[in-house]
Image (cartoon, rainbow, N blue to C red; front, side):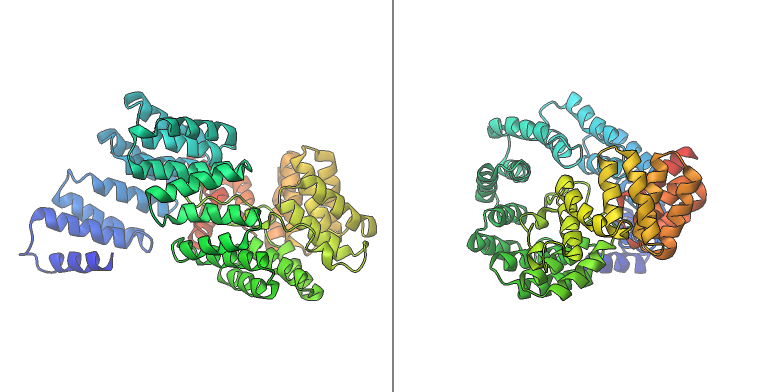
Amino acid sequence: MQQAQKLAEEVLANPKNGTAAQKAEAHLVLGRVFLTSSRELANQHFESALAIASDFQRVHYYRALADETAGDYSLAIERLQKRLAQDPDHWETRSTLARIFMEVGQVEQARELYESRLKSAPADFQALLAIAVMRYQVENGLTGGLGAMRALLRSRDKYDEREVSELLLHLSAAERSANNLEASAKAARESLQLVKNNPGAHLQLFLVAVQRKDAKAAAEHLASLKGHLDLPVVEKMLEGRLRLLERKPAEAMTLFLEASKLDERYVDALILAGVAAAQDGRRDEAFRMLGHAAKGDPLRLTPRPVVTPFYLRPGDLLDGLEGSIVGAARGSDDILANLYEGILRFHQGEGAAAEKLLKKVNDVDTNHAVASTYRALISLGRKDLKAAKLHAARAVAGGRNEGIAHLVQGVVWVESKEMELAKRSLRDALTNAPKLYSAEAKLAELEGASSRERLVRLLSLDPSFLPAKRVLYSLDKRG
């Protein structure tokens, strides 16, 4: 992009040089340069491009991206819809529009975009695969997604090798999610035969190897994907997970701590560091790290895109590590060991196991803030509002300065339709933990339009925080 910027600046530096089309293209390039840093400058260049060439359709696509960056999702959607109406075959516009719809919580509208494409082109591979990917990554429809992709694979002769490789990559991720490890590995290997060194396929093979406790295979696939994920934090976590598999917990702990320092949003990195320390026999150090992790956002374990070729389920890297923390306990009544093992189990999606461990903590300390916070969340997941209220009240009673306790009590009040009480609790959460973004988004949803600027600022700090995008979009729709 730097080279393109230099050429564009050279074209515009001398008004006598270059054709009108070249000057319009130069303004488009410079507009793209400023997309993430200055919406105003980006739009100035886009307007200049249109002034030179009013039919320059690509400009409308990038203006929509500028609107999206500024949090104007309704305007971005409107621009993309107009662009798509002018050129229904422009896949990048359709897929970007679908992504934005999914990010703001309008999943049905995203699906309709792909389905409308199939009405005019029933065999469109990209649309067929996009719907299948939505099913397993967004709609919690793993079985349907698997069925759709297996059906597509039966017609693989209709598609080119790159398309089949992409299909096999997603099939591998879905099969692994369904715990069909052999089928997952087979699909990923076939994908690599068609497109060499595909990092997404190596990621799935790495994860399969970890589940199989095959350190040698995991090391081979990690070596092939390192430097290709564009996510240094995740790469460090994957390497740390390999070191745990190799029974090198001290090295693993160092890698997980480095990942956590790179991006503190990855709560799972800190949990993994604590697990590694526990495996290394460093109980006090492990529990100090886990104590910090326990006070991170309980509603968001890790940042993740709405759809991705590098598919990791929340908690994927925690799988298979149960028992590591209680293994460092000083007897069966070690309250901290039970607490942190319970939180690990919660983030593994094992609510019943987590509840059993956290109850042991509350049996000793009825108002233990962190244990009660997570038990309230487990109760909400079971639709047991009465129990959730009880645990949330105990969490706050035991931790007046604990942001997560006030956050969960706020969520419970929302579920109870007690909106003023919910606002008060969420404000208390932010007073005690200003970086608790889940509280910020939920409070903004209750406060309405007056909170718009705060949400835009939050998203400038963390563009991946989807709850804020959904609230911002809903506020715009309310007017």
